[in-house]
Length: 64
Image 1 (cartoon, one colour):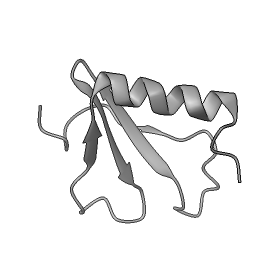
Image 2 (cartoon, rainbow, N blue to C red; image 1 turned 120 degrees about the vertical axis):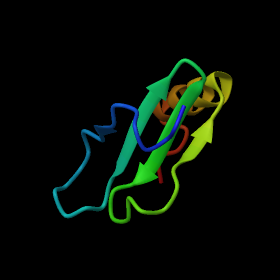
Image 3 (cartoon, rainbow, N blue to C red; image 1 turned 30 degrees about the vertical axis):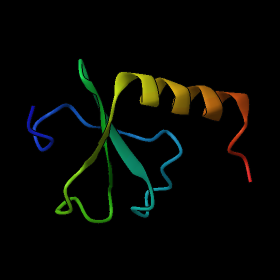
């Protein structure tokens, strides 16, 4: 899948100033990109890596 065409979702934590992340979930995992510069190619992750990341976020393991 081309990372420029999936249905992108903006983070619910977006402040409206462009300092946020967009995610596009696919059957092969997820793409993610910085909303400040959509011209930079999106990064991708496997379903397992994306699930582990979301689990860590939900558990608060990445809180500063």
